Image (cartoon, rainbow, N blue to C red; front, side):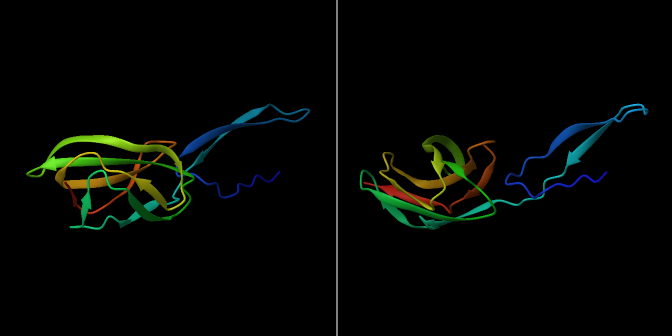
Length: 134
């Protein structure tokens, strides 16, 4: 008997138990373990580090992804003197198209965008630090 596995589209390790049995032999359970090394990363193209974005003015967030990422969460985080102060999700479960139209609604001079896998919440990329101004 031959068992084969195909490449999957996630980066989550997994296991499966397979029972081998045939007439006249004792059944045997075998556990197959997937060590998933699919690398997913997201590179923010806009906003870029040190860019200034205007509050309440529509802005197109742009990114590119390596690996397979079907859906993404995007959140904005803000800081003061390098100390995190807060965050909010801009969008969750967005089909990974590489862009999203966003209207910023906070003012802060130390913001970043965080890109997360929607299936695991794992961070897969972040933008450089940018400003949101009046």
